[in-house]
Image (tube, rainbow, N blue to C red):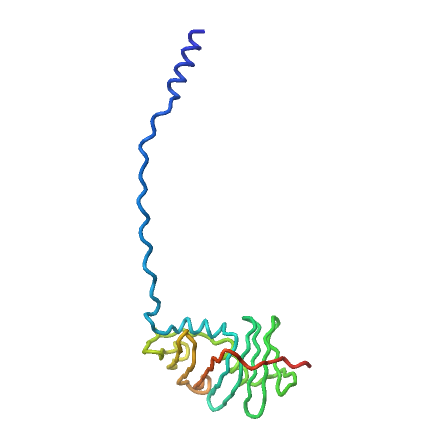
Amino acid sequence: MKKVLCLILLAVACSKKEAAPPAVTSRPAPPAPPPVVRHEGKPSYDEAVIAFRSSPGFHFEIAIGSDKASGDLLRPRIGQELMRFKSGGDEWIAARHAGGVAWYRNGKREKNESAFADRVYQWIVMFNDPEKTPPQNSGDHIEFKNLNTNENVSVWIAPGNHLTKLHTTGTGTAFPAVSLEITHDGESAAIQEPKS
């Protein structure tokens, strides 16, 4: 029994907690970094592209080569765009749905839209952002070279990074020169998809 009692006393003696080391005082958190100044007051082409692709609507004037169009875009949600434009005496409407784009010419369903109508759609609804040289800012004017087509591109951006004008030099019939003017008036004309 003595042995058992000695073992118990030894176990109790060994199990006593050692004094905890003094608490380490935490250092104060480093100060928050200063806010990042974006673009140093200069317009941003990248932000203008995002704003253009998500804008709820605007009026546009576009010339692609010698063909011209005047129209409006209405975007209730991204991916549900309605575009209407007039060109050469025809009124075109493109309504984007989950299953694709429904085209109408002068109020009637059109299954073979023109190449020009497709180009207008690509510029206004899709607005591709090409591989490019680093953009050169000078005030509200940005210039770069499209590395895919070798065209020079000039873009004008208003406060709030709203794209207002775009001009490309073109490289012939495959990529004709483009002139685009956008009016961000806050409201675009009401556009409705024809019933057919």
